[in-house]
Length: 327
Ligand code: CUA
Image 1 (cartoon, rainbow, N blue to C red):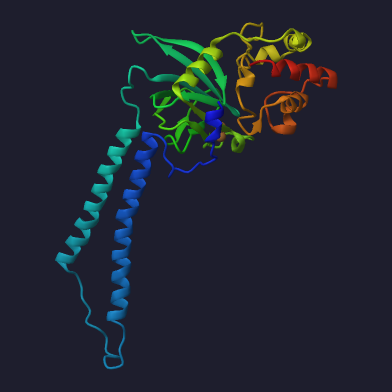
Image 2 (image 1 turned 180 degrees about the horizontal axis):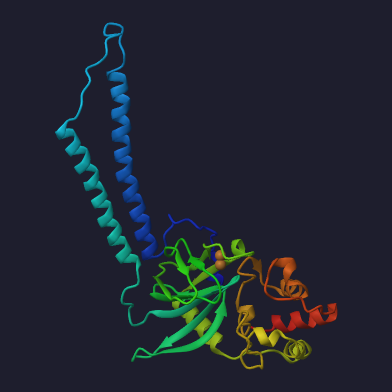
């Protein structure tokens, strides 16, 4: 984890591509920029040249210059020329679309289903058997861990409205549509944290519907994967908080594996403290944030779907201590 955080950059720049699909899109951009820049310089240069070369001179004025109507060679040239340019742009665009769209994934690809919610991201990790059958391993939220240098195949779904999954340094923007599954793939060259964000207006907290892709070196990723598959563990000294959680409506919306909390509406909290951030990665994950969040989610995230349970300060402390024990 420390290695991954050391290389954190907040960059959302499509020019700092860190995965093949993003690099294909960046290269297409520069190629089109080059072609159009040449055309721009050529036409603007000709205009400036003609303005200067054929400007009104004292010895010719005020006579009207010769008036020319129609020229087959010129009209053919300026029809075929642009048509050829557009055809070349079309070919390179088709080549890029083929490179970024989902193709046959390598057998060792990591399969994750991304589910967009108002206003957070849910991730379901799957294991694929040699016969191609997928088995759900666990669910987590907002921080997507993937191994370095391994293909990642994402299935994108929505639980409510249209969102758009966009991690500019890794791949193009892909809409997350209710009732329809979209696909996306990337393979990240360097470990680190890659920032992303929902790119389709989806309600009150759209602007704060951020996400992170944490790219771990393979060994660290395996350790993370193993830990996430374990049921929740907590300490005896958080018993009061655990009972409080179990007695409230929390269990209807959240899952803590190994307890009676099996709700699916809100994020899975089984290994809550394995995440560096809360509130769609906008806020550091610590006891203070947990305390403030449970006291009144709307203070930190106006419009949030979670209500305030009007707990006492003592109850809030017990609850925060319990949540902070979920590692
Ligand atoms: Cu989700 Cu915008």
